[in-house]
Each structure stands twice: as structure tokens, then as C-alpha cells.
Length: 43
Length: 238
Image 1 (cartoon, each protein chain N blue to C red):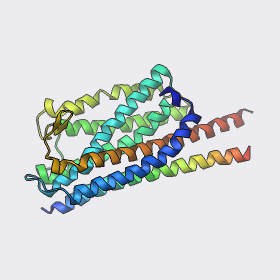
Image 2 (tube, each protein chain N blue to C red):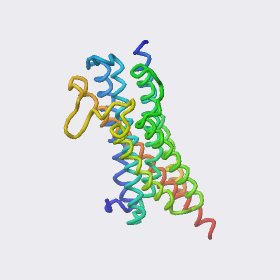
Image 3 (cartoon, each protein chain N blue to C red):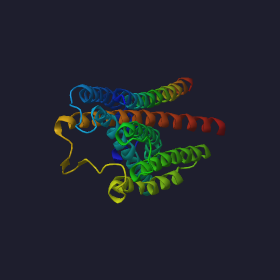
Image 4 (cartoon, each protein chain N blue to C red):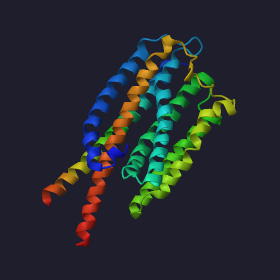
């Protein structure tokens, strides 16, 4: 069996999972903080 | 801990901490994984697949540490009514669930060439799968309580009770000696040769800092969302 394929798959899962989590956390944070800033401006 | 009970004070700390933990995490993860992939020898039994350890072990540690964090936040919420505890619990859960899932998937990928199977109902594997389902249950419960406008006490209670699974995961390899090997790294030392081991703590610290960065971003999003909801309630009321 080709061991490289298993290593590549495991690293892809870990890196994509981490990147996906960070991207989602960043986008939700940015959108919520922007909404708060807009509310402050409209006050 | 109570110094950061004030959300404004917490945000003053969280904003720069998000950037620093993210940058340091990225750097350490890259160094750890590069070292693990290119600068360590293959294992005499497993061959090259031992390199999966550098992503599997940190994700297992973060999956468990995440729930320990939820349990601490839940106790703080239930006992001391710490205003940030409910926010912290909600922020940790998706990150912990992600790493529990990564641990299960990378373990399965590692298991195929090592054990000859993708999955076995072994004590460690099963208790880790239960942890992943506990995360899903916590996320669903916390979301439902938030939508109802509740204080999140039921989710906090679930967070404390779910911590029972942590020692089960830890000792599963001793209680049920089936497929997963016993613990290789402990407080007293490691059975892994140092030539293979050295990138692991670097990668683990890197992934941990990225986990912290994700949690801080989620906490900031939760706090901003709370402000928006409070403002909308005030507008609706008067």
C-alpha cells in the first residue's frame, strides 16, 4: 500500500479542518463586529 | 480570571491576543509539521505513516482539552455566574468538535495501514466518537437556549456532566486492551525515540495557539452578537 497517500490524506484533513475553523471564526467575528460598529454610527 | 469578567476589559486583551496567537500558532504549526514530514526518520515498524502522529495527537489533545475548557466555563457559570463563562463555552464547542472530528478521521486514516482496518469498536475510538457526539449535543443545546433567551444553564450542566467522558477516554487504553496502543507519552517520559518525538510538542503548541485564536474570535463574535441583540430589544421596547 502507498503510505504517502495516507499521510497526504491525514494532513489534508487536519489542515483543511483547521483552516475552515479559522476562516469561519474570522468571518463571523468580522461580520458581527461590523454590525456593532454600524449600530454605533446610526445612534 | 475575574479580572476579565468585564467584557470591555476582556476585549481590550482579546483583540491583540487574537493576532499574536494566530501568527505564533501558524509559525509553530508550520515548523512542527515541516520537521515531522522532512527531518525525522521513519518508524522501524510503521514506516512513513508514523508522520500522521504530528496531526493526530494534537487534534486528540485539543478535542479533549476543548471539553475540559467547556467544563471549567460551565462550573464558572453555574457557581460564580461569571459573565464571560457562557460566551466561552459557546465559543469553545465548535473548535473542540472540529478537532474531535479531525482526530477521528486522521486516526481512521492512520489505522488502515497500521491495523488493517478503518474503524474498530475499540474503547479509545468509541469514547472519542462519544466525545464528538457530546460536542454536537452541547452546540444544539446552547443554540436552543440562546434562541429562547435563556441563560444557558442546561448547556452548562451538560458541559459538567459530559466531562465524565474525559477520564474514560484517557484510561480506555488501560481498561479495555483491544486495538489502540497504550499511552506513549506521559508526565514521566515517553516511549517514542527523541529523533521522532521532537516535532510533536512544537506542532501541538502551534495547533493549540490556533485553537485559542479561533476561540477568541468566536468569543468576540458572541459578544458583538449579544450587543446587537440587546440594542434590538431596547429598540423594540421603546
